[in-house]
Image (cartoon, one colour):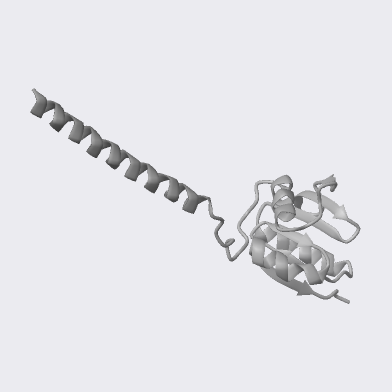
Amino acid sequence: MTTLTLRGAALLVLAGLTLTACGGNTSSASSAAATPSAPAADGGTYADVNALQKAYISAGGNCADGKYWGYVAFANGTIECDSDTMIDVFDDTAAILKYQAQDRAQGYGATMLQGSNWLIRTNTDELPGLKVKLGGKIVSYTSKG
């Protein structure tokens, strides 16, 4: 009976070590999963302008007190963050291209950060840093006319 008890105790110790090892691996895997990865090269998409606003703020932009404009010129949602910054979410890239064509036709030029379905129009010196954090591409055009 003593031998059986010692064997049982040895099995319990081994089982405990196995569980501890598995627990350690699980927590390190969770830590690795929580590490942010690089943004999508095309900037990915946002479900709505509020999601873009949160991402913009997380990337260092100032937009906590932004004014929601609603649906503006092909955009599904626009927020004016300040006098120099507007952020927009569109259905898709085709809607962005329509917006940009209209902008140019009306005599405007612009430089902005463009994702798959979004734009950030702000000071041009901020765009490279935002691009690193959010992805997308910096787009610049001059007015027609």
